[in-house]
Image (tube, rainbow, N blue to C red; front, side):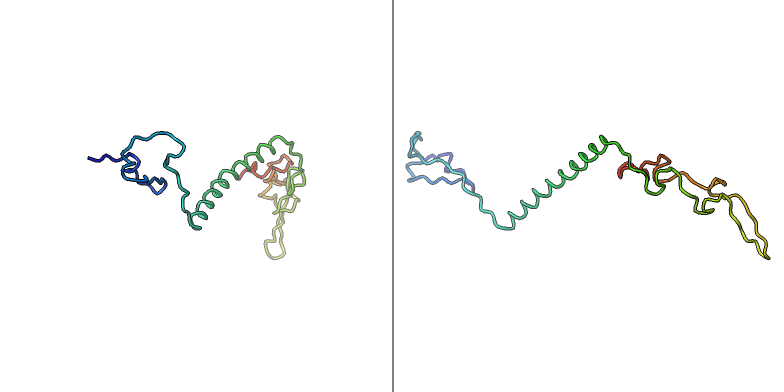
Length: 148
């Protein structure tokens, strides 16, 4: 009864082992320089597989890199003082009322040449409103600090 070597029963496209004769498979293996050991062969990849693997690796790198980049930018921005004046209000913290154009009163023509002057309902007669961009601070908020 012939017993086979554990390596002759191993079939894999990655491993290559061919005994020189059937009787070699039955002999005990000795370690010497001329012995043949299983070798890992190069994987045969076509161009589409290489492209798919490359796209996958690049996608993972971008998926990790972009959030890390934004986090470092946010951390660096938090360390710097923000002294840029608000653009819409020019750093005053208030904007001119659009209804009364800063007068505090609105003139309404009733008809027949009659007019009625009343306090502006938008600004309550003040003529200005708190800036909605900087919330009255006069400092331009950073992009991620803005409230919606």
